[in-house]
Amino acid sequence: METSIKNNLRTCKNGHQYVKSSDCPTCPICEEAKRPNDGFLALLGAPARRALENSGIKTLEQLSNYTEKDILKLHGMGKASIPTLKEALKSAGLTFKHD
Image (cartoon, rainbow, N blue to C red):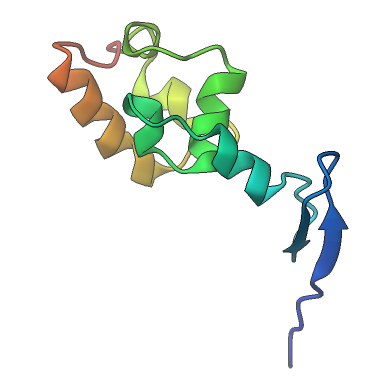
């Protein structure tokens, strides 16, 4: 059985045109422009970064108030981001909250 993915040309509110094969409404051009240049959020992919930002987690100190399980429950956060977050916390002398 052959599966085909339908690509849809979209235009965001800023006028950027992009193609998406999913229902995700996020414009990749706008997302790249919002990507931080430094700090631990700059180390993450857009879905993981948005997951933290949408939860109000913008600093390592804020992140240290959560367990790994809490963070993994966030929509857009995957297991692959946890080692990056652990290393960032460690470099700041912090850790995830313990269960």
